[in-house]
Length: 624
Image 1 (cartoon, helix red, strand yellow):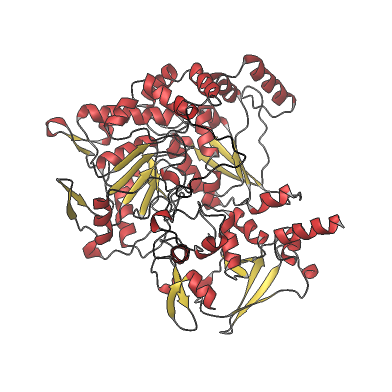
Image 2: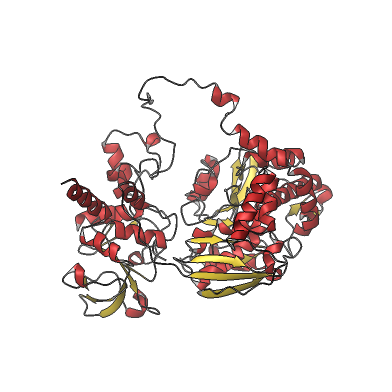
């Protein structure tokens, strides 16, 4: 099923948008030795989230750009959804042209690109006098201030420096359940669970790493951090460090080129020796496709309520996304993924504590295996070659021997195997969606994921707010996809309750809004809404409202158990984008919200009950 607004464009309908503000992000200085592009992007993500860039463009500029390779810039730009912007972009300069040449573009093509951009005043030449651009707002960063860091445990912009990680982890354990809290009683925070792992004594505690994945299109397409991960693995292997066998490790590069330069440099062997074997190219652990943990490990986690950890080089770590059994998920650079796999825990201060014990019982610290920026640069320049890009790109349409040996049916319609129509996923066996599937003779082994079944609205509707880590304040902080049925005070799944009687942050997709509408929700009130989710709510005819600045349900004294009356004008023609709307409750409270219909066209969608109804009526009327 097509995305909501994509469907309307195909019909065809114009796409409306508010002219975005452009935030200028000035970079200056130089990254310190050993600091990676991932450290930079996590710092930028935190800064931009704090600044507030939802619905805006972010343009990076300044002399600091000269210090960033194009792959580093791409790493930053590719995280735009995580820092909330519509787009993050860098102007073209000589470094961009060098990258085009390195990746196999012909000199004539590169010269044409440069000439065109210069003629249109879109090329940045650092030798020319520079006029300070004018932006809607400004933010500035000295690259020398960036420190090694990771982000988590539940959001990409919750950055933690390595030196503060141990203290931050213990604070998370103790804090009440939330984005930075698990509410673990003090006497249980250091509990150790021992178990037999295929004849080997193993132990788990809160913060034990059970998944370590070098993955995602953002980081694994950057030669600098990938070479660094290989150098860390090589040094660790030579010093006698090992990854515990109960940690699930994987390597999923963003391109076949990565495999070629890791092979040429001799570093792929060391990654494999530590368990980071090549599992394929594409979306794996970063979208929850890591596969199951060993059942022994899974049982130890669930039976003892362990807050297990995953460390990955992906973009997103929202709750429930990486794996159902890893409640703590941290984003890190590829070399730090290797380091945390070796340490086996996020409960560590690398400045003071060793990663592990190497040959001769020698304690090995992070500084013993971390490569210098100069060393990384040397390996990159001698092993990342133009021919690798050319040969990889040329082979894309040719396929590989295994692919080419597949027998292709000649029938007009593909003969699907009725027993194999979905990529396996994880719809929980006790969920309303699972009960629906069982009622329709689907075996639990074939439940698969909501993404696999996104064309079935009955399944998708039953998965609304189905994240196993979601926290509903009506349940006093209890995590899970349930709520209180207000009239009876009964605890039910959200779907069951609905049928009986930074909103949108995450992997925003059309079904998040579709399911909301299908449950009968007429309006959503939030402190703020992510751009994509807000527009999808509008497309489904759901009213998006935002509290006024400085207000929220706690400051107003709302419990969620009230009845709400939203006082809209009597006619859509009397409504204005962004106007104030008064909301009153059955407990006689009154407050004002901002109506988040941002354009006149969005008001028209609402008037028709949603964008699809609007489009269909337009098509019908034009046919007559």
